Amino acid sequence: MLDDIFRKLFSSAPAPAGPVEYIVAGLGNPGYGYEYTRHNAGYLAMDFIAARHKTKITRVKFKSYCGDCTLAGKRALLLKPATYMNRSGQAVQEAMAFHKIPIENVLVICDDISLPFGVTRIRRKGSDGGHNGLKNIIYLTGQDTFPRIKIGVGGKPHADMELADWVLGQITPEEEKALGPVWESTLAAVELILKGSIEEAMNRFN
Image 1 (cartoon, helix red, strand yellow):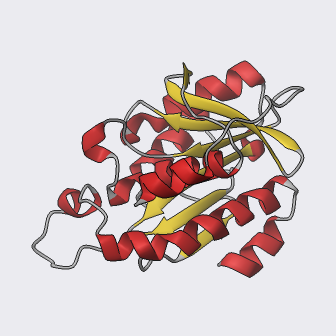
Image 2 (cartoon, one colour):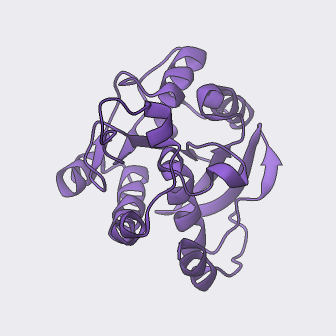
């Protein structure tokens, strides 16, 4: 179903001009087996953003799949780290260094098991909250002052269930249907944040 949505939305667009001003990084794990898992909520959000803005995230650079588009009038590098979740910081750090992007201009989108499924939380900065992707970005950049959008995937349904089995489990058809509005609100939040209106984004989508 998500493939159909992205395919319908997708067509090419002119490449944006000027220097990259922002990095928008959606966290996840590469590979077919991880494609529609809860832990890949960041990847799926990036695919939706790219489709809406008629671009592709297919260029291989910075240990990532990359694409460029204009968001809120700003040239943004869309980044899907291919390092696996626990080493996301390698990709983010390389892209930051190449484009000379300050940490405050890096926006990270990731899953969050502490939030109910489909609930989003926007933060200006903060700790990793137990998320290994955020943890590695903070560790390698030495800073936690980057904005992030967290997409709730809910906690594991049974206490005796392994957490890895839950986050690496496939998104169900019911969950997939519920994510449609989440992608829309995430895109709107990204555009507000890149406009410098993070407070408005937090008021609207938290």
